[in-house]
Length: 241
Image (cartoon, rainbow, N blue to C red; front, side):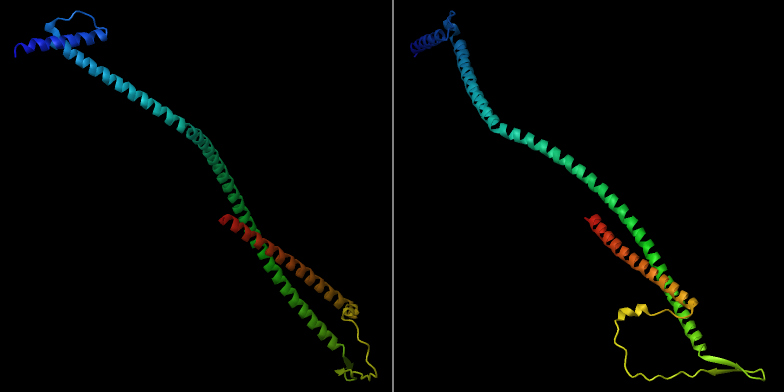
């Protein structure tokens, strides 16, 4: 057994020497340093293999990284474009919101203005209605007064010798009509002559003129109220939207 150990040692020494020479390590090697050098050589081989595997793995990862970068590059470009478009849309939304807020403020101001004008016109409308009713009442009173005056004209006052006055009504004459007048157009009623009393005619004309003017103004105000109500409704709908 002791004979085999030197032989084995010599074989190990020969193999190690050959491998060292292959790797370029040609320095002298003693038989007594064989265990240490053998251990160092084994570590060297292991380190070399690990380094080679690490380089291969690193190269593989580098290739994979390049492939990923190549695949991601279009998305990077698209992402940059989307970010730019998103910023532009955000700015547009901010501007549109500012414009909408400004328009809403203007519509609210116009709404308040038209509401005030509508209230003023309604008040004026009520005033005109009251004035028309007053004039109609005055016109009726004057018409009644005219009728009373006309009725008095059908009575005669006679003073007797004793100084007493006596009212004697006139007898109305009767007429027999053999034939009727031809029918006339109702539009000819406007050509009927005014009353004989010029004062009464003037009063009636003034009253009729004032009533006609007030009715015209009243109709105009009512039309303006309708227009304003439509505008206010439209503005309210726009403000709600």
